[in-house]
Structures are given as structure tokens and as C-alpha cells.
Image (cartoon, rainbow, N blue to C red):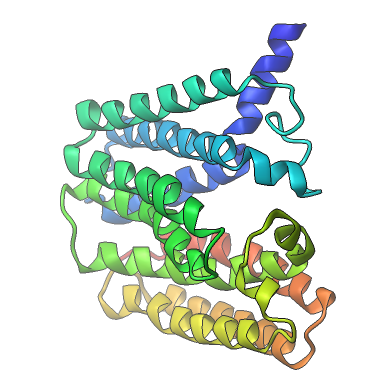
Length: 287
């Protein structure tokens, strides 16, 4: 029974929902980069290696922030702050699967994809995580590793970095900003309690946060259309992405004009819906 509890806590440590999203965006990047024939074995190896790295990164993040998590209501019941899991066990587990993921990608995919995965981990753990206690600009830094998975999928399929890989990176990077700001708005008291000076915490009136949301969403609308402009996707995607982006922007303006928890929650839910629908359109309308 105790063993099952430990396994469940280790599984929780990897933040399965976020790891799953990483694997989905990686898979989409691979599919978009693939030629006429889809190498399913290579795709499987890419997803396994990326999944291990993502899981390890999430677990290391929980290890690094165990003290702050204990002060936040929404994270206080996680395995480490709740005391259900030994710190040494968590560190060994998270380091082990991270190294395994990187070596797996080197051996069975390619070094470029492995390097991007390693960069994602290093930025997230050693730059983004410490910056969370110092500046709200940590959100910009944290969006970088979150945007690398579709690029990793692309490089796994093509073996190279090119303009379209950067467009995929840009889409996920820009999407994360209003998504993160909405989360920060909803849980700003929790973040303040943990000592994280994210923008919604230090922006009492919410005006700066709203401006950031609108600016990043406007940029997202433009960048999301580039895959069609550059010939990767067709007209169905173009007009679908435009419609989604404008709807997303409306939610951002709603928060700017009526800065309440309800409008922040609607923006958050809109962001959760936006990305998977956009990715589905990409896959369906790949030229």
C-alpha cells in the first residue's frame, strides 16, 4: 500500500497535465515538420524522450519550490510540502528521469532535439525558478521553455531549425503570456503569500496586466497566421486561427474594461480552449 502511495506521489510530482500538453505540442510540431511519410517509430521515440524530460523538469521545479508551495493554498497539498515524499527521493527521481530523457533523445532522435530539451530544463530550473522571487519578468523567461516542445518536434522530424520552427515557437510563447497572467490574476493572493512578485501581484489596479495581455494577444493573432502565409497550412487554418485569435482578444479587452475575477477566469478558460483548437486546425489543414 505504501509503495502505491509513493508511486502516486512521484506521478503527481511530474505534473501529468503539463507533461501531456508538452507531448501534444511536440507531436504536432513533429507532424507539421514531417514529409509525406510519417515515421511513427521516430515520433514515438521523440514523445518518450520529450515526455521524460518534461516530467523531470516539472518534478525538479516542485523540488526547488517546495518551501513556497507550502505557503500557497492551491499547492500546499503537493507531495513535498505535505511531507508525504522524502526530499532525497524526489530529487533522485526527478534528476534520473531528466537525464534519461536527454540521453534517450540523443541516442534515438538527434542531438539537436536533445539540446533543445536540455536548454528547456536548464532555463526553467536555473533561470526562471529563481527569477520568480525577484521580478515579474520571470513570466517572459518561463514562457521560453514552454514554447520549445513544438520546435523539438519539428527538429526531430526535419533535423534542422528553420523559420517555420521559430513560428511554432512564437505561437506557443505568445499564447502562454495571457494564459499565465490570467492564472496570476486568479491566484494573486496565493502568489503574494509565497513571495512571488508576478505582475498581477504588484499591479493593484490591473491596468499593466491588462495591457500586457492585449499586446501579447495581438502579437499572437499575427504570428498564428504566418504558418499559412509561409505555406505550411491552408485557408481553413488561416480563417480559423483569425477567428480564434479575435475571440481571444475580445476576452482580453473584457478583462481590461472590467478587471474582475470572473473576467480573468473567462480569459483563462478561453486560453485553455484556444491552443488545442488551433493545433487541431494546423493538423487538419496542413498543406
